[in-house]
Image (cartoon, rainbow, N blue to C red; front, top):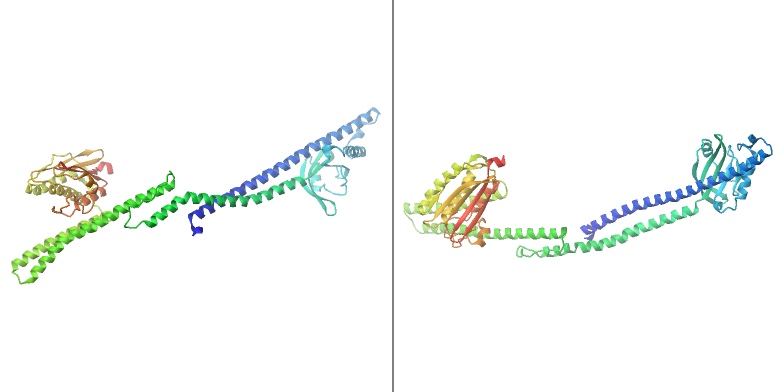
Length: 494
């Protein structure tokens, strides 16, 4: 279902993140643009109020100089509550009513009590001078306000207003208010808000559509992989996923699937071979048991004959039991269920004891066994398991070495490992079979005339790996084989 697909979740999250990002961007843009417009408006008002004050002061100064020349006392020309100043202010406003710089500016002049003494527009009946603002002016502070005034019934205007006191002799002489309509500013911000409101969802929607297309394009190799995986069964594990010509996560996923399929193929093949070989190994002892029991039941036999048959049956039962025990051991190694009783141990005397025991078998085949005195090597291991490991290797070497041959055991150290090599002069192992030599029930002697079950090397490898070591094998046809065991020495593990 598309809604539950990874593709849909990616697109949904992408659209949500984009919507949040655009929303933050839109709010930030709107606030910054609004501050910029109001800031520009405030700068204009501040410039205008400065011009108004300078012009009025120039008018007033001219009157004062003329009066002084006529002998009038200059102290009579204080601006504070002076009726002459009110007349000059009103015259200045009337003269400047057509000034281009003041066409969109409302200028009002108040006395110290907040009474209007001059105005550039016919808005004398509108009170836009608050008591709070009046208090601020007497504190000699300018202030900006945004106010709405009703110029006529049903006609309202929003103004940006600057109120600034004019100080004379450290006292407020009069108050100037300049105001400018905010109609164009409000309309501009309104249009920006609508534009952002419409663009945000449209941008998110169209980006989501494009994202869906790109996601389909990007995940197309995954769909092909799914189709290929649906075709894979136990019978055609060799079928591989097509590797895309990229270096991204999809390629890594395809490589991982192919590696998994390769491992599964090896596992199925190994299990198939395991079942076939196990059935083959059981077939012989079971056939012998069945045959001997059938013979024993055909007629009454002597005690000696029954004893011989039972002894033979016991040997076959022991053989089946050994196969079961070896398989159980390997299964426990595979599942990490086996517990090793590791202790510090000197490997040298253990190797000598094993070689001495195995010499009895080698002498029966006229095979000489050589074991030069090795250096002392201490490992941290399970004595019984390590002994089992080297017995299996020596037994395998004796088994595949012809009469008159030689088995050589050498020991030494390599870096942090104790290194023990078991070499024989047998027929060797073909190169194409080296990789399978540690597989269960695998024997490169296809005739199966050699004794054993083909589990010894698998057990030896599992024991070595359980101790943190490894086994390497080198072989040349008609020149013999060498198995080399590496076990960590105690000073590299503690």
